[in-house]
Length: 75
Image 1 (cartoon, one colour):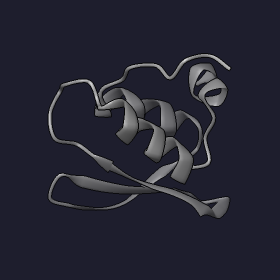
Image 2 (image 1 turned 90 degrees about the vertical axis):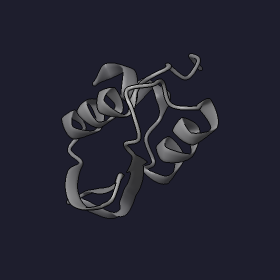
Image 3 (image 1 turned 120 degrees about the vertical axis):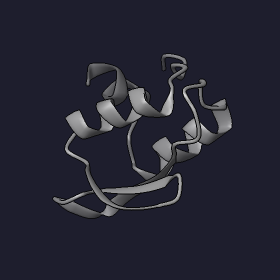
Image 4 (image 1 turned 45 degrees about the vertical axis):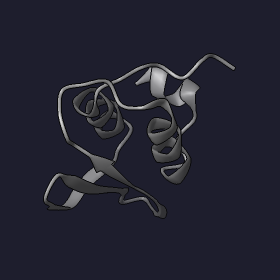
């Protein structure tokens, strides 16, 4: 398994949009996205700054969205 890439929130959103996720709503700096084809696949993305996301936060987002690192790299 390849290592988790270091991404900003904007880069992660671009990749998740390419995988079919759509924006549902935003409250403050947190954006809720989900996959319209699978209602169980959703994630909340914190868009705080242009800095690289902490690794634990990124892993949690990928886990809740049911996205693997391989799928993320292909997008």
